[in-house]
Amino acid sequence: MLLYALMAIVVLSIAFSVATYNTSGNDDKEQPVQPSVASTSGSFEELMEMTAMENTNNGLQLTIYSGNFALIKEKRQAQLEEGYNYIRYSDVPTRIEPSSVILEDTGDNGISVIEQTYRYDVASKSGLLETYTGREITVYDADGKQYTGTLLSYRDGLILQTTEGVISLSETSRIEYPDSGDLLTSPTLIWQLYSPISGNVEMLTSYITNGIGWDASYVIKTDADETTADIEGWVNIDNNAGTSFEDATIKLMAGDINRQSAQKAYDSVSYEVPVAEEAAAGSFDRESFSEYHMYTLNRQSSLQDKQSKQISLFSKDNVPVEKELVYNSWNGDRVSISFTLDNSKEEGPGVPLPAGVAKLYQPDSGGQLQFAGEDSIDHTPVGDNIRLTAGYAFDVTGEREQVDYERIGTNRYRTTNKITISNYKETTEEVVIVERLYGDWEITESSHPYTKQDANTIEFKVEVPTEGDVEVTYTSLYSY
Image (cartoon, rainbow, N blue to C red; front, side, top):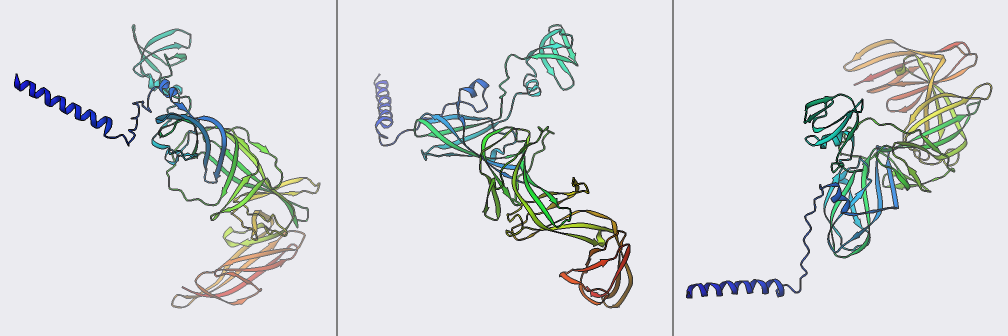
């Protein structure tokens, strides 16, 4: 008996010591409340019970890049309790990059992100069938006959295990499910947060999504004399990100941004009819950003999902233009039609021009504009020239022939080339002949004067008479 009494005293002493440590030994330290055991992959009902970030479209901003992706920034409100919270952020794009998401507490309240989950199991026919494989559903065939049973497979028609046996249905008119199968109505981000405060908190969410891109296009209308042109610049924005953006501030980044993330393959999609927005010239504010150029639309605009939109970038009339016929033997016997415009502040658009496609229109004898060709232009800074090839001349041709070739030493050669330009028009035409030379070269003889454009290029300018020919010959020495 004495032994049992001593053991009881020891146990009571230990219990008292532990209780004293837990209640009085840490008065100066607040013990954090442990998170609940809610699951971010739980049922639809559990997710709906989580705190939702209220979508107020407050400060919605899109920075769209020409590489078919965009940076989205949006502020939303969330009602938080002190301690651990689960909050959901719905209506995110289906093509979001989850690893790019940044959640910030705009009020510096000390809120920290513990865990993030991206749920993209959105309700669909195939998703419901997959979810309910092995579970009971009700199916109606094409004639309206009802079948209830366990879904065994849906890959090649529906196969059900009913009380009457296994049946296969190739065509169905209706399928009934007991519930949504815990599938979501839209892609959703779920965060587990720790908040030291209670109350309504504003949070800034930033993320990158694929499926939104932009490019520039230009309309160039020359006069009948082909000496001046009116230029219109347009921005084309395509939204195929999987969600719409209402009343957003839109920024466009021009330049080649390096990216390392692998792009996933996506199913083909349909697009709405393009929407054009006439905006006043100068509707975009331009600024330099690092080594790129950024264009900010000076009003808010909406982008619907699967929509293409055009917005005016600038307009400039009476820009001087120079037309040239250019023969380059690399193009065979064709003579290209080239137009050069000055992008200076004095005479040209005078703005940084993003890369894009320029379409050329010219008036016919009746004054009606006709499409005369198109070409792509690269990023063009202010002060540089815009040069585009509209097409190839019908009545002016060229031919190049090597008429002599001699090896005069070790890795040293002498060649003579002849270029013939033929003009079948009723007017005299000036043609620029472009010749490329390689190695260590020297022109020893030439029938016409030439200009050296760079280390490997020379140009001849010749007048070709009406229905006549001009022959240009030159001899060069070169070595490797």
